[in-house]
Image (tube, rainbow, N blue to C red; front, side):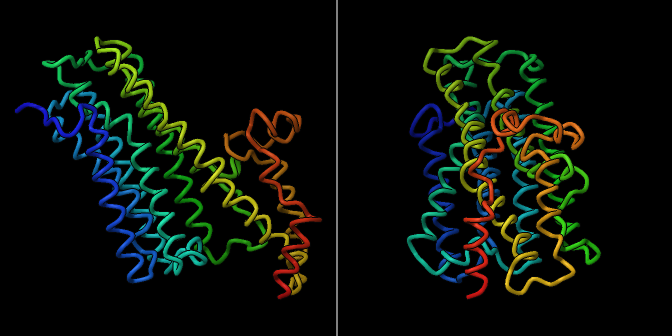
Length: 333
């Protein structure tokens, strides 16, 4: 059977329509029933859907296409399954408390999820499309096992292990009754990075893009097909930008700092947790914000290196005078 040619040769329109339909269906269910159980699951499972769909209708089944598709589907099953399990255990997702009952604000989140899924899936979508993989119609399939194939798989595997391990460590820590409440998570990977799951996710998508690139670098494609594969670098770039400046690090850093500040300085701060803020500040000084580094090395690095090369930007900082005073005032009310 020949590949299915649907709407365009790169499957961009088809995957966008499928993603829009799937996410809007999820939004309708979440809005009508006002619950969070399927929100993250719908995002993660959408990656699985696009990977399987483009592999099957692309109908070429080259080794590279199969491996890349399986890796994306494994990542999707892991993230969707873990997030569903977590929200079922906790009962709700506090991220949506302020927008769940506002139609347009809640819809905006789902539109953002559409953009996320479609953009980050681009390397695999384009690889599985006829424009790249139909060797009978200007496509190309260099022998599997190029240096880029190997580097891509290794990066993905390391990222996947880091992301999955860190998620498990954090869940167990928060679920354990013996975990100290006045100390941030600083065990395992979390002793080397304040956000190891985000670092792992970035590695996964850089790996997928590199893995999908061999038809351009080692094969023979048209200029438009090469441009599409190179343009798919927007997938890992978007992942980095999203996690560093939108829904990732910014949504975690200041809220966590606020929690520990109020433990020590809030209106109802218990005496036994008076050291919470001091301990949190010590944790910040010795723990890299993203890239895992030994605490003994990180603590000795110049502040300039931390604020630039290691991405610990001033925007993440909780200002005691400004943010602290505001937090105390809100807590008092």
